Each structure stands twice: as structure tokens, then as C-alpha cells.
Length: 164
Image 1 (tube, one colour):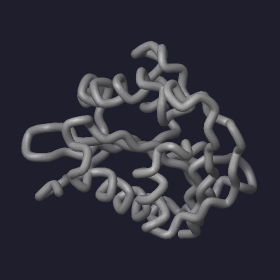
Image 2: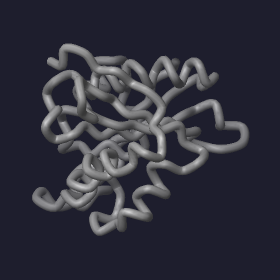
Image 3: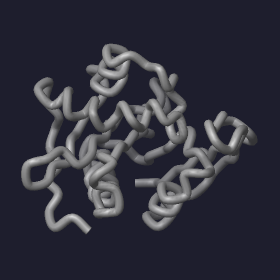
Image 4: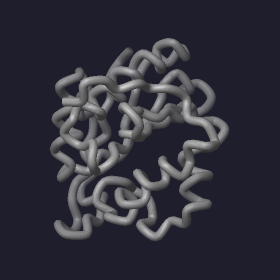
């Protein structure tokens, strides 16, 4: 486990490090419902969009992860937020995702959200599913064969939610 993870709002100067974390995850096509060939410019527009609060997790002198927080819906359902998380490959298994989750839950509460919802958690992403469930998220829906996994073919995806 990481001895210390510091989380802070991302700045434009963080983009190259963020892209280095996002690129292999997006290119693998195994966990995000994003075109694996997304361009760097489109990835930046997505991850760093003005309506998103984007954060970075840092260790001693390295970026360990990144996440964003955004309203999942508009209008009368804008009290439900959504997050996306990516841990740097070299930092996996070191508690970074757990630290980002804890930070995001607090940031969401502070921003006035009443619930957090993940819209498309790929069922084969068992580490993420287990982490979310361990922190009180429930599978509130299963989307049968909703995700084209590069190795497993069509797999289910979950809608997961936690009241804040």
C-alpha cells in the first residue's frame, strides 16, 4: 500500500501526466466505454471538461492516479454525481484507488451531491466492483452484454450507486 497519497485539483500542467495514465487504460478497451482510439485532444476535452472537477493523486514525486467528479444528470436529478477513476499502472495495488474513492466521496458530499452513481462498471473489472461494494455501493442494475470486452467478448455491465 502507498505510504502517502496526496490528492489535489488537477491543473493544466498536469495534463501530460494524466494522459500517460489514461492512454493505456483507454487503449486497452477493457474498462471504459470510450473509443480505444480516442485522440489525446478528445481525451483531454472529456477528462478535463469545464463541468468536471478533475483531481490527481500524487506520491513522492509521481502522479499515481486521477479522477473526475461531475453531475451525472441535469435538472431535477442533478443531485446525483458520477466519477471516473484511473490508477497509473505502476501504482496499482498500492491503495491509490481506495484513496481516490474516499476523496471523491468527501468531495461529492462537500459539493452537495446526495448520491454517487457509476453508469457502466464492466462486470469483468472485479477489482473495481469489489472496491465499490466494500464501500457501500450496490449494483442497482445489470446491463446484459452491454460492453464489448477485447478478450471476453460481450460482457455485462453494472449500474452501481451509493447514497451519500
